[in-house]
Image (cartoon, rainbow, N blue to C red; front, side, top):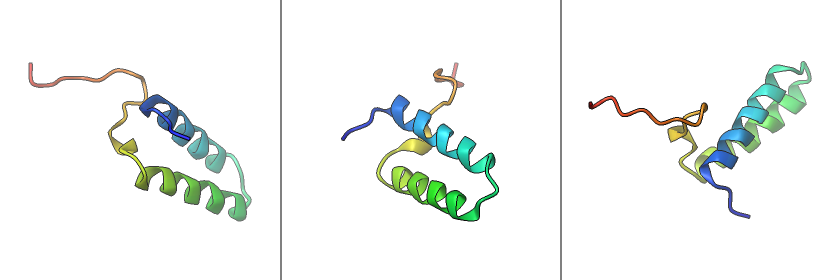
Length: 58
């Protein structure tokens, strides 16, 4: 299944939120592992979370 950039950003945000709101280290590790897989398979690091891209050259 292919995800677009917005899908990947949403998934990453959900995984980070879930990891931050649990104290079960096994769950946290699983969330981080999935997030790392997404990060390695895409350009997820270049996504703006608010949906806007800013051009600072102007």
